[in-house]
Every structure is written in C-alpha cells, then in structure tokens.
Amino acid sequence: MIPPPQEAHAVQNQHGARARRENEHTTTKKTHVSNSCAPSHFQVHKLCQESAAHILDNFKPHLMIAIGGGGYVPARILRSFLKKTGSPNIPIQAIGLSLYETLSDTVVEEPGKKVTRTQWLDLTSLGEMKNLIGKKILIVDEVDDTRTTLEYAVKELEKDVEAARQKLGLEGEDAKTEFSIFVLHNKNKQKKGTLPAEMMDNGRYMAARTVGDEWICYPWEAEDIEEHDELSRQMKAKQANGSS
Picture 1 (cartoon, rainbow, N blue to C red):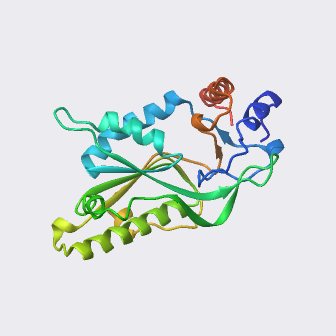
Picture 2: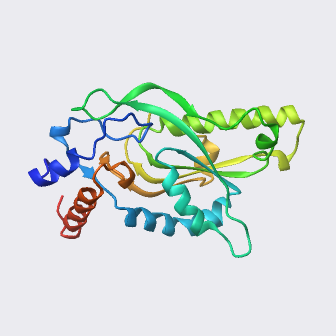
Picture 3: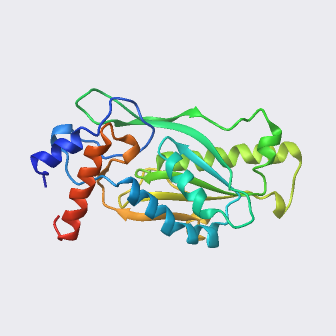
C-alpha cells in the first residue's frame, strides 16, 4: 500500500545521504516507500522502560556494548532503568559496524556484502579485556533485520574475549563470559545471520517489539525531527483506527 502523498513526502525526507551501519532498513526507492515505521523518541523511551525489568531479572548485565550508531541511544536510556539503588550505573562501551552503504541521493542505503569494523574495543589493553572475562554482557542495537551485524558482533566479541582469557590463563565458571542481546525491533523475516543456539534457547535474546519487514526510521536518523514526529503521530493514529 502506497502512503498518501503527504506521508510519503515525510518518509522520503528521512533518508540521509550518509552511510550507515546495519540499521537494516528495507531497500526501496524514495518514491516507492511503503510499509514504513517512524517511532518517536517517546516510543523508544517506553520500549526501553518496559523491557528493563525482564533484562534485570534474566540477563543481569554487568556491562552493555552498544553497536553504533543505532544502539547508542537505546543503551543510554536502558542504563537509567537498569540502575539499582545503591549500585553504580552499568558501564557502556561501544563498537561500530558498517554493512549498509549509500548508493545515491535517490536510493535508500543497500546492504553491503560484508561487515566492516569502524570502531572496536581496545584490544591493546589487557586490563580492559580482563574486565570482560566472567561478566554478563548485554549487546544493544536498534533493529534486528538480516541478523548479519548481530552475528558478526557476537562471534567477534566471543573470539576476542576467549583470546584474552587464554592469554591470562583464566579457567573455570568464573572465567565464562555470557552475552545477551536486546533490540528495539526484530523484523519477522528470514535471517541471513545466525545467533548461538545456547543464546536463543536460554532466552538471552530480547526484542521489545517484533514487526513486519518494514522500513524503520528512528528519530536520531531524522534530518527534520518535527516532520519525523508528525509522521509518527500519523502512523499512530492510523494504527489506533485499525488502518493498514
């Protein structure tokens, strides 16, 4: 279903020309945007708030690793809700991964063929890597689309932590690092990437919402935040009225 001209125009203007990592939006021409979603800052905040109790009860993270740039804002919001009275804030570290690339001003970013690191943990500091060993670590991103970026992040982080563990000669259960994942939205579609069966079977993956294979524009991607919020209100009104 093609959105009305006003809505389509608002959606079109959300696409920046900058390259982004795997924010995993459906590839489509600007002039043929359909099945779109534009969550507001308020909605993102509420998704984090309602997910926090489950994360505290089941994941119990000592540390969050945000995948940039989409995971930065959700991780920061989550930290406020995960803080326990009398305890320090959960630290946040960041990694940057790029899969999407901009082709032109008229075409939405298309998936690249491989994940590229643009920022990573400081592997030169054994002290820092030692701080990851034996911890429960929550990986945070905004969307799980093809799952390629999440697969890469988990595999590479597990590999780096294991290398540090062996170098330090640490053994036993106390040296086991456990990764979990939180995303705002999981797209209900066939995935190209896979996550460890142990993670999925033991409930260490959480999506605040599962949605269809629709293009999602988050408020931190919007060039015109007022237009973005207006689009978000329109979509919320349509959902309330049962419109498709």
